Image 1 (cartoon, helix red, strand yellow):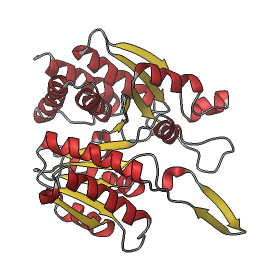
Image 2: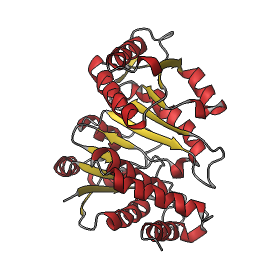
Image 3: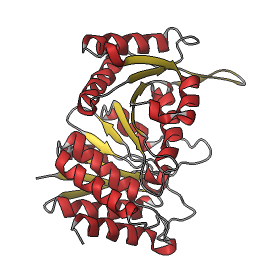
Length: 334
């Protein structure tokens, strides 16, 4: 029995998440869905952006799908991003972002890479304070333990992909203690796992340039939290943008699938939201957490078939419904 904690969140999350679940039920008819709440609207109604009941539901299910979250444009006392809290409190210490060329929507063919980023530390540790009037300090946290967890996942993914290159991305020339610790910890473990022949490294600014110039040179990128967040959004241009960008927040015996796009309040409720990022995030959950690569292949092939057919990803007010129906028809061989 597969159990999935489902957090629709805010905005278009309430549209794309039900669409993705409808598709997943074609592959897992006995799927048990456990609804839960988190997000800005939840905070405004209850005073909690991430209720303890939601955390417990995710722990009980061991797997989840998170839709989207709105964030206030200013600091609000008591509010903190629920997705960041989920990553930290559930020890979802690795974030996996695939970037691949898709028919029709990608501006360049031949791109197929994965960005693995540390998901719980770095500048997202939440350690900020005012040192003096007009001076704010943010603390960057990098630990050997978190780096080693990331490197072990990188070794696992490299084996599955038969990786031709593993690239460590850092800024150790400017941050020799924190980025140096990251680089050395990851490199030592990966060397010990036998990846020395394909292991290289890049400074983050050069990596950004090369992801724009020649993304097909990369295979598996391993980096820190903030750098990975920025680079993966940059690289998803080659997949067709944020509407095609899936991710998986990955821990030990627990994982949370998450489309990368935001809550898009400007189109919420209009039916225009593209559900493919949510659908492809569930493919990552199937492949890497539930160990159902066969079903993940079927789901990704259905998306490939839909796009090859020439179906546009923007159908106006019918986008969500028509893409959902198109993927289901492809799954069922219609």
